[in-house]
Image 1: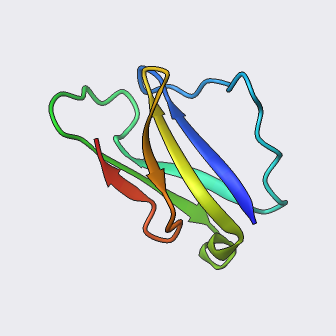
Image 2: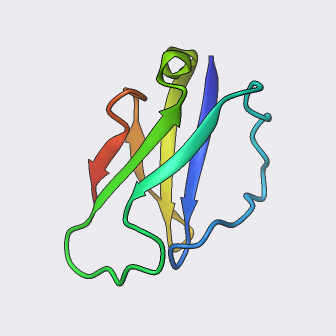
Length: 84
């Protein structure tokens, strides 16, 4: 099982101070929502997808961060979404 961390700080990717282990070869995490350069206000849907989907079962947890703080802990990597 692997943990993937989606970091959203001003909605750009940043490196974590504590680097997670590298994902297995062929596994990719894509941020679906919010879209790049999208202005966010109010309640926002945070959504990601793991590609290829058949490898999503290898992911145990997905964490979303915004402004340096953890805002979501997703335990279902196939759904991989939460409201913030």
